[in-house]
Length: 168
Image 1 (tube, helix red, strand yellow):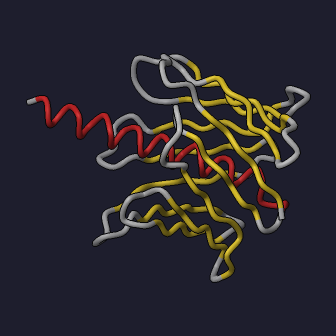
Image 2: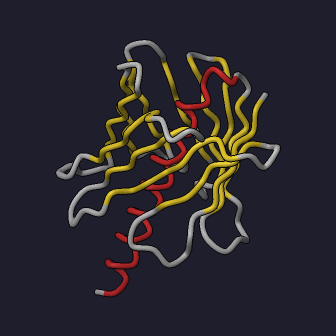
Image 3: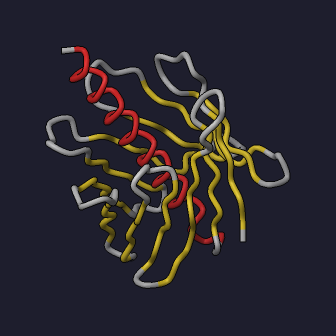
């Protein structure tokens, strides 16, 4: 079992932050590229070696992300509507991943087929978005981090959309 943590800044144009392990050591660096449209994030390991990249599809009704790993594998992550649950599908050639979250979107469980491989928790009372990832098999560390960044982007997009619609 492995734990990873990250905390984002409150006032930001783009995200740049470190991801720490349970020993408070840096495991990853997350760097978002500035874009007027879309979303692009590059993630490197502690030695600043490329691990993966996330790109958001610009013209999509619900958020959709393409995740490209250094080994050439890919994931497609997309949100879908479901009654009282946030459901996010993750498509992969190698894995059969599924996320299930609570109604408030603060806790997600990640499954490969029917086996739970991780759970993701967003801390409620913190300055900036703070996430904890408990990874039951460290083989999935890169994948779980990528999924967590995607979940955070989906939540940010929903928060922005709801504040825009309430301003009207």
